[in-house]
Length: 342
Length: 167
Image (cartoon, rainbow over all chains, first blue to last red; front, side, top):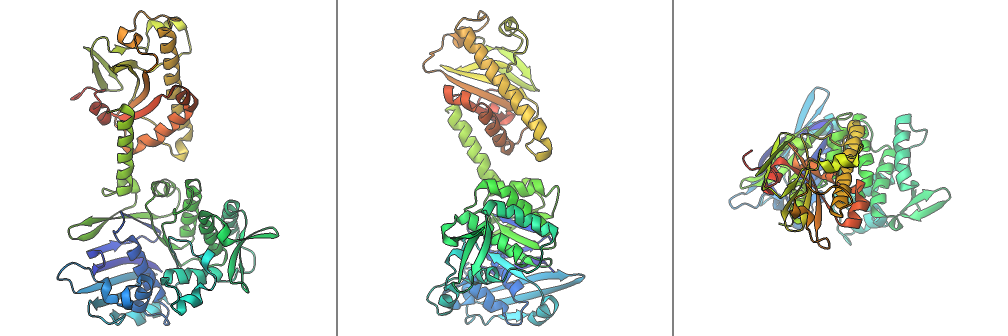
């Protein structure tokens, strides 16, 4: 299965927008407040709604966490706007289905009008999806799920779900050669393997006989360790969808080429990927490395008088609207100005 | 005025502002194996710019790595050799008669030295990785002398009046 397209009408920062995605790595760029994470959370909610146990509208509320759980608060705040519609298209083999939701500012909690949820579940019921939030959470996973259920703490569902995904038992049996090579490369960086201690409900990084508490490991390494765990335990398998909000956050640029290699290899094995980024190095490496492998599409979100719009292109360098590149250029101009002393 | 055409770019300066180090008597008198930039120019008091012009450069992609490294080495050598040759001349250890006085009579305590590479038709976003690579190659030289390494395309070079406007 692959997410093909999204149509948005008056949803948060978007007034009217339609984006076509590729089957490979979709990279969302754009300045803060252009809705990159909103888009990913929306599509993630649709992916989770393939399960009969999960309602699309409730999942949106749980991933966005609006005040009083009111989905109506996600309607675009422009004066005169009272309702919102979102339609998401997915394809499996030759079958294309869509899932849509409509709600207004007066909609109670998550009681939105959802269309085609049953056929969506029927067609895509076996879909696995994973959302890695920008902030690392495994180091704080101890008791977090029960605390969240009791409303003692408030985390959106992306955090709760990723803890569940990471806790999945390591797959038994030998890893195929391609997967082993990927895991080996990640192990070199994290200098160990992830170990989840069930009785203690805590994650550790294990190296030989010694194990280090996850919260004592650098945050960037913890993020790479999470990727190792998701690959090892079979979460990122063919036909699944991975969402990763700002993979570069807290990761030293030296590790970025390997992260890009990994994501392109995961994509080639049949995983559709959505990432958001503010990072020049990450974007450029996708540009360069996708010449050799993988399918990549950049989606640049930018603000206009009529809400956020999007420009898409297979190449980062060919985007007309590219705030990351433009900032980089301005930085260089400022540097020359300083060096030239005028 | 003196006009210099290099790498399909036109440079124009007042007499006495510029020293064409390439194929100069200074270079020839030292002998074989010495690489030079195109010319030295002073646009401000006590500031000497070493100008190298190129019509293209290899991009730092994996398949271009060898070409890229060769390019960085070649440009760095040109700056380094020219700088040493110029210093040897103003210290009167080598031939210096052809060097204009504005480039000889500098305040040796305060003078700033700038290594400037101008690449025609180059995108600005391709300049930074090249600049970083050249700066790193000349790191010890730059740390000792506090020299600048600056890369420009033709458009920026016109803004700083290095390449002739309207050419």
